Length: 410
Image 1: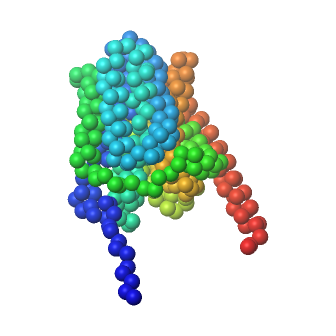
Image 2: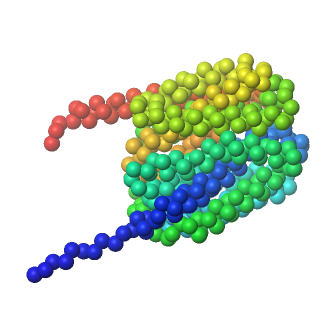
């Protein structure tokens, strides 16, 4: 009897051409650029928002924290609620949600309403990056999947390097509200491009929310998130108050602020590649090297902030803390087990916890009369705490390795 082998049909992802993959990755990167520009816009626009809203710099810092808290709440919540959705449907919904949140931010009439709208705008941030990264992996050949994820994350880095300085310039020339309006337009454009270019059926195995939560709720996962949430706060502490620091300490004209913000982007781009190299060579041990660098750079910031050349050098040096991102993201993939989606989204929640913690702590120091450059000392202190969490994580890993080695073989 003849036995006919089962016919193997290629998946939707396997049928995509290189051009189609490139277009989808471009759309996903554009979404990351929109999100990154909106996330960091308030930092460069701080003087303009202070004058327009009649509030203080630390109060604008609270707007930054409100957005970051939205990311922290929304990343795990929307990742779990959207676990059963088609990836294309979920991406379109998240981009639509993001456009509405930023349009509301552009139209918010009062400071109090802006606090609410910035929180709402932050809700889809982490879930978008998590689903976008998984989609990029699903459509890419096995030997190019790491590159695909890095392209998605490139949108966030380019936002710091290009989007944020442009947003600051636009706020100075026209009005800061137009920045959030333009972000809403870019988010809608991203949704339109994904609707056209991303085929239906780019989906992975469906995970039940309770199963992901069980796999996620492990000490190594929380330790990795803790390193990012606390250790990275120092960069946001300095970044958030860079504009008034340059005006009142460095004593330069507002025209130089976009260049100072771009310094963080330059450092972030370099740090992104350095972090990947460090993880390939040292795994999680690369984190202590980044944190040690951060402590030194942040402690030097008050002295470097006094002249234009040295403060620009300082922004690049502190921006190199971005190397922590790929190290912790890669480590989370190793320790998250079956909670890959939730871990991918929560990685961004951890870094936005840092984005909330940094401006809040820096604002407390400034309000206490310690001066704009006190953000460097506050940031160094958070990096020290992050280093302590790292030491705890290393101790846990060694203890688990010893326990496994002592188990009798079966």
